[in-house]
Image (cartoon, helix red, strand yellow):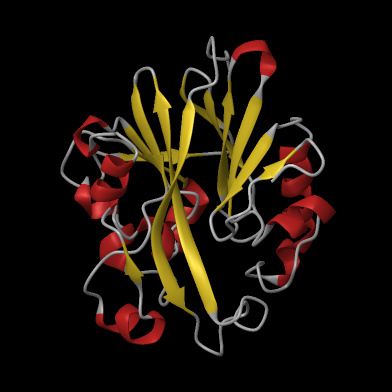
Length: 241
């Protein structure tokens, strides 16, 4: 991946707040609530969105998670980006809170990048909301491992939370790297300590892969790492959050 001349602006988008049911593995540790972030990379070729948050009007999701949130278009507008200018969407994985507003772009020419293994997993019952996660064939970009999205922007396979989880690496001038780790971890502490907690790993046999994914991202020596469900940005300089 060739780096960009300078690191592009990366904005976090607060897309939703959820009430976690008691059965949710993170309910006790997070006080029964969860924030949902997406991200936008203000790339010279056009904005690249990473995760689209929660969709609207799904009876089960509304009843169980009581989501409150912002329309993706409004969130983009809030950081000075026109939703019509988006050139690509990357889904870290296809759980309902990461692909829920994908349909805003279905039927367009905007490609949607998802790990092939995640596409297959999402077809299983109770995995996600099918109408949100089912990308039209003409837009689906099935990723197998690592893949460049644009100059200076690369997808890295980071299995752990799910088998098909992926993260995004952005590289700018003089080798500065920022990672959008998404749900590689639930919070900044797990990233710091390189921990794969049972609550954030879907299947027990993915624990080792989850730790390896954290270490892989940290081996890139990023200056910062962003997370889907935690407001603190990890930074390589101690004491800076």
